[in-house]
Length: 143
Image (cartoon, rainbow, N blue to C red; front, side, top):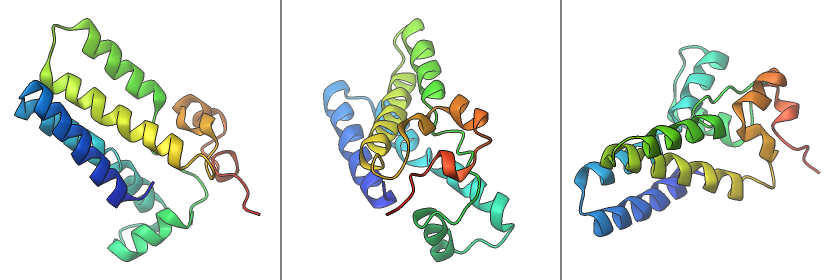
């Protein structure tokens, strides 16, 4: 899913949380995790290209799959599940709850809107590890 759509969806989800819970902390943690989960793409970009960051090149690299391996450790069903376990096992915490919502909605939207292109199992970090993070196990072949 493209960044601009993640930003729009995250603003709507985070704004709804604010309207319901009246918590700036929850709004902020949802907003930050819902958008900045994508920073793991920057780490992979640097792994492949070195210190040569240009915004246009970065988005071209991401959207056109110019990579051989992809770690994206934050895009992990396991990580989101651990966050939910921690969140639900603690006394209610606005920041943790907002972070869990933000990461969850980001990952769910990626799974839904990238499903035509990305194997669903590739959202499991364990699967990516077992497949050595290789592109052919993450991205479906294009016709």
